[in-house]
Image 1 (cartoon, rainbow, N blue to C red):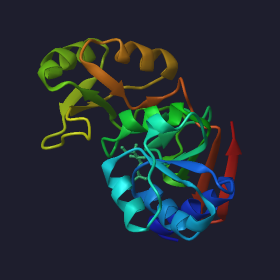
Image 2: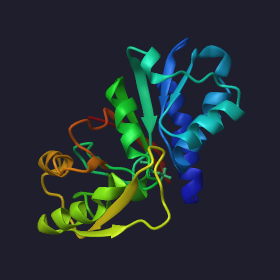
Image 3: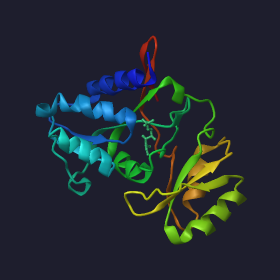
Length: 219
Ligand SMILES: O=C[C@H](O)[C@H](O)[C@H](O)COP(=O)(O)O
């Protein structure tokens, strides 16, 4: 199977976590795009969706799935999203598409985070994928210097502006042995909006697309 076929398989497999008449939290990215297509096939059975990005919102809208503002929702049963890396503790790196800040916010409101990935995203130690950090534009150089002090190698993602109007620094050469501490440490740098580590709030379930079928890992 191609990587896109594995993504499609997990996108559709995630439908089984969607309750009737519920509001669904929807992530961002090429894997989630398959989940959005799947959601379109049951749109009459759900109340609507909360999107974690403008891109996902557009896609949901195009399929006629009602969009809700997160501020009008107390709790979501499920949040479905992809990841750039996921480790055996269900901790992730996200933000390859610069959407991680809003993803964290929507995930925070959800009871269950269902992570959908193809098997290339499974790792033992996070950090081969450069860690995305969303930064207020005027703080870019300061934050970059602080990230160097932590042992990383930050690179400005040229030409990318997040949905929140900020910039992204991708941090190379981190071997992230303690994701929770690292997530807190980076978020404490003044000027950082959010970093792409999802360790304080990891996934509850991972659906992994493999050539032998979709595997379910519970956290
Ligand atoms: O900012 C983007 C998100 O965190 C994505 O969920 C992540 O990058 C995975 O995307 P994809 O499913 O396209 O590999």
